Image 1 (cartoon, helix red, strand yellow):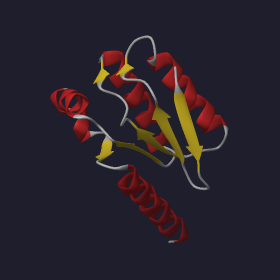
Image 2 (spheres, helix red, strand yellow):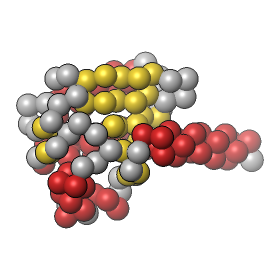
Image 3 (cartoon, one colour):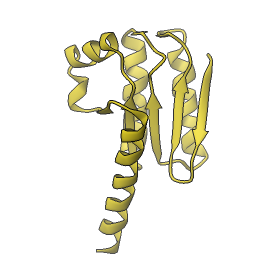
Image 4 (cartoon, rainbow, N blue to C red):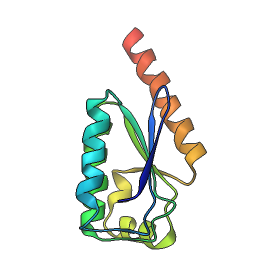
Length: 123
């Protein structure tokens, strides 16, 4: 699977550089999430701007990432195309996944979450 990970101080951005997220690629994506967690990342942005199609196993990988990082910090998805967004809505995953339009908005969402958690810990 072709992908890129942009590691920032507070979060990592995973960009899958494939057009299809399917049963052949979803195990690789889940492994990336495990590796990021083992490196200590608690906040992950999933940039899906290259992905034109996802099957149920691709959605399963997103759910796995959401479960893993939502409990630690945050998991934000951005860059959905119309087809993948419709699939997520039909599956009612839009109710549990944190989805924003752009990578910039995803970064802002993560930073706000970091600040909220710091404030909660100080209280």
